[in-house]
Amino acid sequence: MADSLSQLAALVLPHLVNDAPLAEADAQRFLLCRTTSAIEDWLARLAAGIRGSLRLGTGRRRPDGSLAVGLRSATHEELVALPGIGEKRARELARLLALQPDIQSLEALDAVEGIGPRTLERLAEQAYLDEPWLTLASATLLTFATRATIESFLALLDESGLEVAFGDGTTLARRPSAGGTPVARFLRLLAQVRDEAEQKLSPAAGALASDAVAFLARRDLRSRYLADACPVDGALLVSGDYVQAVQERLAQAKNEIRMMMFVATATDGDADGPGPLAVVAAVEARAAAGVKVRVILDRDEPSAPYESEVINRPLVKRLRDKGIAVKLDTPSVLLHSKFFVVDEAAVVVGSHNLTRSSMHEIHEVSVLLEAPALARAFAQRFDALWTSLP
Image (tube, rainbow, N blue to C red):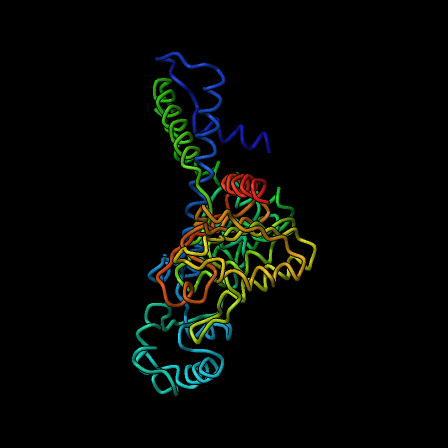
């Protein structure tokens, strides 16, 4: 592979004009960037073709930015979770769409008993009538199609028998995949990139050292900006979306869950979805599985208008009865924090209290962030308060 990369490098940058001082290490870094860019250009073209064949786009979005639900391809669980649907209507809705594939408007769904104008209005924000098709896909293929890098391509080769094919349908029939190890298939890609680079080679090919200096400076500046921005994976949780997201993330906890909440209950949800009881049950299940769980709740003065101590009392007793450690904040200080820390790897923080009204009656917004550094900072805040409380 080293020989193939060296041959490609010699074609994409046959010479460097020393019109400005350029350290040998920087010259090698510039050469590496030019070489990998030639490979990534091919991968970008390949990913674009995959996106086209899979019809991947930006996707239909809900008002909160999350992906909407395609009703025809939705699972039963996805239909049940939609506002105003539930178990019975989900079955009737799926049956209607299966028997009448020509339905083109959400308004036609009022044929399902119980789906009226208000439910249709809410459905229009969460779902749409899709036109599903059968295809083959995998997590690594989708990752490469949406984020084409050498690393994501190598992961795809490692987990599949796929390789790059260049040509039309006749060419593919005449030159079927040769197969082989991931390394062998990657080397065949390098050969194609090298052939194209050689075809495009001209006497003027090369670069000025001053251009290399400017290029590397821009690249380093971009890297610093990205590092300062600390990009993380996450999700916006609006109103009732909070319950399912927190429930699913807590279920993945392996070491410790920290929960700090102003007010919390263990009440059921309503027709629009589950309530805080589902989150409480998820906490209890992980505690029963041996995960360390600690909880801090607010306790106000008897004369305070919030009545947090009264509201929190049943949950405090319930958790302590199950062996879960719970502490209450000092009455003279209002604890208004609302967050979970899971394994010092993820944090859920925002305006949601753990109450039914917070899930279904109040416009709340929280975020789930897969950010270990940030999660550790929240964990330190929790631990400091935990230590200070009796």
